[in-house]
Image: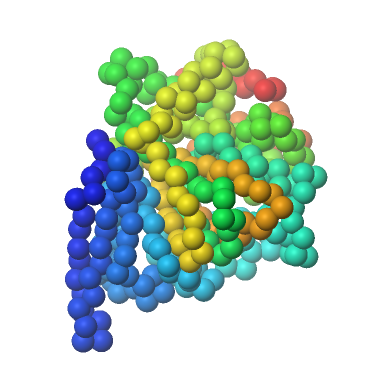
Length: 338
């Protein structure tokens, strides 16, 4: 169901003797996303936070224009959603630069690992599905962005599920797929070594259901993306064809929204039901975002992992991650190459 311009909510609170009105306005002609105004994220009251979180669960993507948060303010906002992930060994707080500008001030080139990861993220994906513990949510704020290109696009996997016929839904609910950053980067034309930075690890490839039930709303959604491959019981080519077709059909209007960044914007989205991708831009120009990622609940986001033959080792951190699924013992063998 498409959202309409007329459906929006207002919430009032009193701050310093003044009535503050918070407006949550759905994005037109799409099934996800809302623009939230009348709120200062750097100074949230409890009642305001509750409204924001309710909207987060309802719309999947929230856009807060003209916030211009400091790093500390963004860190505090991120921590309201839960425990944050450590994305970099140099990371001192929840937030890290998501940027083609290197610490020395030069721009990333095709030989840089960061360049390869940024380019890979131009494919539809859900964050952290290649980690044993997938993420709950993520946020980005715009610091410096090009005038053309460099947008971030979002896709509503709840609505994509709703569009499937009953027979297809039942078939997909029986399937799982492995997830690997090595795999997705290889398909994008980039190879990486195992150096135990985030994603390029030796903990194995998680096996996750193709259809996910949201732990808070109960809604079902497609849960695949560019990191997914190797459905047990199928050949590599059969699995690839099914997953590619599923994503191609899912990520279509009116289930998508492309955001044109303006410095000061901050966006938060629900990784459990929304996919996203970066759009290309002139690589001779800086594109500097600040990102934070919120860890998932182990009860619902922790997955068993299996040997990923693209990695240079398999050293799972817990036996819980590696014990074979009974359904897969007879039929499953992960493909060794894409």
